[in-house]
Length: 282
Ligand SMILES: Nc1ncnc2c1ncn2[C@@H]1O[C@H](COP(=O)(O)OP(=O)(O)OP(=O)(O)O)[C@@H](O)[C@H]1O
Image (cartoon, rainbow, N blue to C red; front, side, top):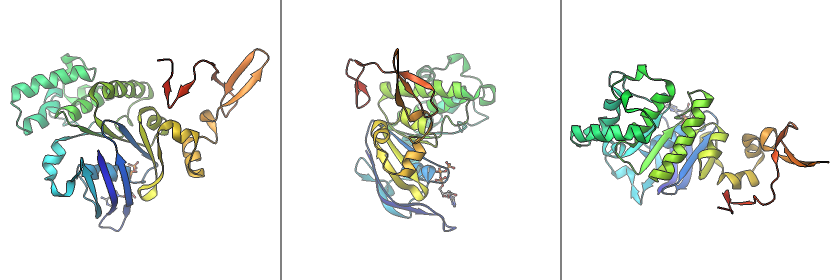
């Protein structure tokens, strides 16, 4: 469990990126921080592994105050995946993945064989192991970034807009892969995005942020969609317009769901009632 307690971050130029932020992020779940540009998402994420230190307040990991921990050691036991993969350009794929375990003292040979197995885990061909990042597609680079984030077998994986720079089709694939990985690996994932659809797809817990890291609403995707806490949230999630504002239109031949633009979005199936996002039939 990760716990923020009254955390504030004021940068030296006076910018208050995060103001009195309190939140519990449950273990083995995916918490998504979502908000528009400048709402403090990256700052919050980086305070977890002490790439940024809070000005006041505390952050605890499993009850331990991180301010008392060595930042370098902390960073090496928390996975971090960023936009544009952040791979080292002069290292091959396998070297990029194995770097942190080697720094942690894992023998080179073992670190490299573990790294090969991680390529399988993230759906990459082992034949790519000796390529350099510039010889990979954007989607492949992001997969290597995820493999590198997982290499030290961390309990916590921080992901900062990891799929923001790839095209929509690859993005869909990577999102599905992450859902599969999360089922298999059971990590505590903290995921930052400005895309509410991505947040609802991936998050067990979704935290909608306004400027200064102010929490507009926390909940599961279905809780937020069922009852947006404010006009800001309604507008942010698109409940007041567009594809999420579904309504039932009765026709002579049956009932269809239409979106906010009047386009057919689906049909109502009576025995497919769902509860808290899980099908009752499975
Ligand atoms: N090193 C810094 N010095 C001064 N201000 C900073 C620094 N880093 C971030 N900020 C400011 O803090 C605020 C929050 O930034 P942050 O990067 O956390 O937001 P974000 O929600 O991740 O934004 P984006 O979606 O654009 O990445 C912004 O106003 C930003 O300009």
